[in-house]
Image (cartoon, rainbow, N blue to C red; front, side):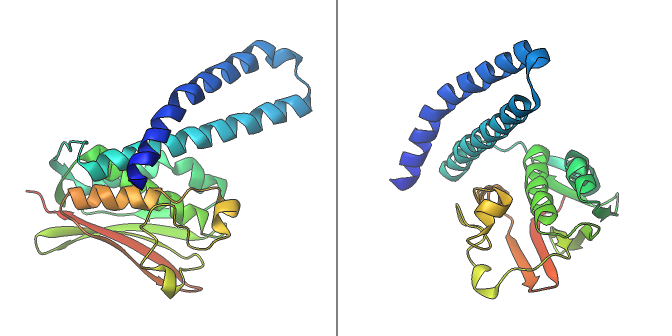
Length: 226
């Protein structure tokens, strides 16, 4: 019932929010030359909040469709390296903003059976988290290796790590590593829940290994391709 309510509210919010977004963009473009610095900053902050709300609504709807089975995957044989490159390129500006070095050297012959768009979405979520919780000038790595009939993907950071009592809940809806994270990192805690739903629809597994003060490795498995 709770999930159905959230989905219903999200549907009701998205239409007026889209209208607000369009109106804001129109005002910004029409008045761009006459705005002072304060108004420019204010409109920029408003746009950031609109984008954040729109992302929240879209993520809620996406998660509801995934969990209710209303999203059909489009699996194909695809190189693991190709998906990783797509995801890394998508978040390149995030890494540059904190001068974080990202490495990914994936065997070009390693194939998986997966919906490439959805798995790229998972990797983008994991890479985004790695950036959030990593210090400037640190390193993040993406690896993949064959494990029996599966391929294991790993995203490793050298951030603060996750407390042991939080490891079992990080993939739940609206969960943050710490209560303060919602304000500090401005996240709703849906990215990992969506990632979990996507991986499970691929008959894979997802998890995290972490040591406080040393960093975390988020991992998931996918069926191996040919």
